[in-house]
View 1 (tube, rainbow, N blue to C red):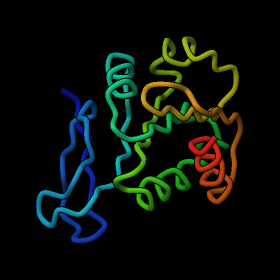
View 2 (tube, rainbow, N blue to C red; view 1 turned 135 degrees about the horizontal axis):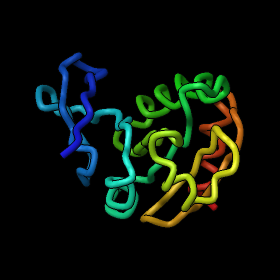
View 3 (tube, rainbow, N blue to C red; view 1 turned 180 degrees about the vertical axis):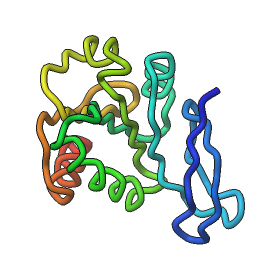
View 4 (cartoon, helix red, strand yellow; view 1 turned 30 degrees about the horizontal axis):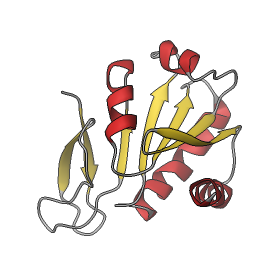
Length: 142
């Protein structure tokens, strides 16, 4: 089972979280909500999206894509700010082409927002951090 290692923003403790875990991750030391940012493979994608108790923001990206690299810190910040209420997963389109193909991705970066396993929003192209947060809020409220 794939895991991601996350530092607790409250106490700094390192926590391992299974990529396909449900619920809301909490720090094993101080019980604070943890930011949920993980790399997801084709094998885990359906489970992660379908079983998440939280909305899932999927970042479809590639390491050679400059706009993708510009969006990455904004998504990390969003995952930290929305710990306990949003799950951010990254899919490398070069390593996992079947996910991007199935989602009909034609350009990167593409962000797809899922809530209870259903796509509720899609954003193609890079946005600044505040605009990503606004897009997430608008997609989840409408």
